[in-house]
Length: 106
Image (tube, rainbow, N blue to C red):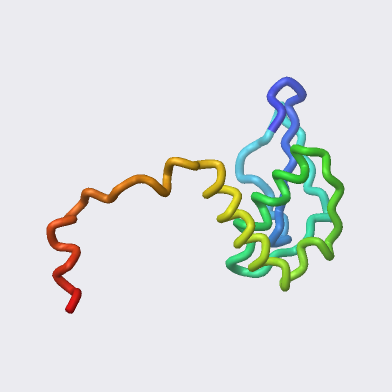
């Protein structure tokens, strides 16, 4: 969304049918690019985040980059990237209910 340009770009990876807005979008204009790689149910979040990343960095992408078989790989890489960005997160000790953690052991 560009407030100064009064323009909205709708990135729709599910490629849903366009529905007319119940309310006027004026003074905004909008567009829906048609070259968005389609996503299947469950992959749209991963594909959306990766598409935003590529768009923000100016990386050109193709539909084959977002093919179904790449969904798990993208998801796994995203988890590793997030984990590496939070180096102290894995050192956090869970103090919630620690006294009862061994209740199910042995």
